[in-house]
Length: 193
Image (tube, rainbow, N blue to C red):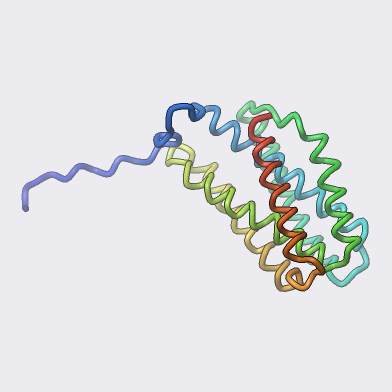
């Protein structure tokens, strides 16, 4: 079949696969930035709560490293909120308190429970960031690259949690199931409010 011109592959555009009732492209992007900002705020506060309890423990250095990466993620989304003129979630004050409380509570249960918290949250964030990256097209290449880079950090956090005994935490299955459910609810709420 020589001489037959093949149609060139058109670049993927953000929101092109939307269905009736889905938000328009601009709202989709705003929701992504809003919820990711909220999530990174929550992550920073979780690690601050854990460090308040476990500051002198052997896992504190691992937690500090993850907290520094989450702080970088938060600062990046804070810049995007301003640049893109996206309203932060109305629930930021709640996530500020709830994140710290979750971190402190799991740390009070022990280092392994603190690591189980990380694993549970990162399981949900893995799905979340993967879904966002799939929705973004070439018109949002910079945002997609940011999300994919942060996604890689989050996967490394999950692996660190597992390497530091998360699965040996008392009540691991119940604890992580509850934290996953709470994380999914927080994502749903922060996307919309």
